[in-house]
Image (cartoon, rainbow, N blue to C red; front, side):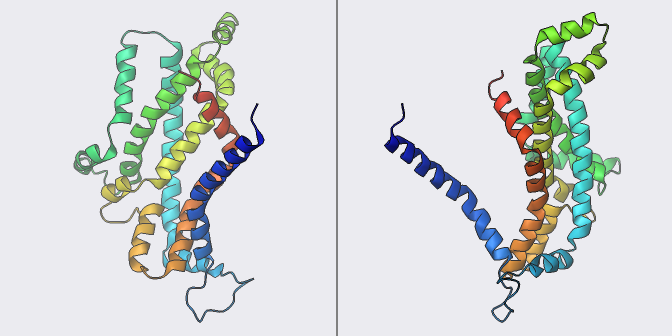
Length: 271
């Protein structure tokens, strides 16, 4: 049984870790609502929400956000569909070369983007794909499918074989079994995959920078870096812009957090 002192120490440790995690976030939020200059007015209740409007307009974030949304939609949808199909094949079926092919998929997790982005740029330029959404999305789809296949394979392998056998006896084919039987059970794993893929895609910096050299398709994080270079000493605007760029990830996580946490907990006990 845990004593009162041990419980108190646990709360102290948790509080310290929470303060370390939330401290930088609270500082950014405080700076985002701070006045841009010493002679600025009092604002609304001492806050200055107009910083977000100024940052949005001066940084032209509307077009950059649309680019990020388009890239994220392509990557998340494509990676989720391909990962589910590949994970289903590797997790429930046995065929010649399946192990070798699965380990080939895992190479996508082990090879960093920095090692392949320059050769990919020349390959895409040779076929006229640079400065397009596909040049930004395709490398991220490949990286996300590598992890997604590993993740969904573990989820499908943990599913009860009796469900698959029952569906087979009822005359369901492989695709029907996947859609009607296994996917509803694997919903937390799918939601976790979607959230992680969206987060990685939204925060990606290097691939959009290299694949769009003329700057026509800047994503939100890339635009934030350029905005920072133009407003080095305007702390309030920089903080407001950072909050705007990070807000979509926070909103997606808050909307799906219940399934996300459940998927992470289930995945932690699977092979």
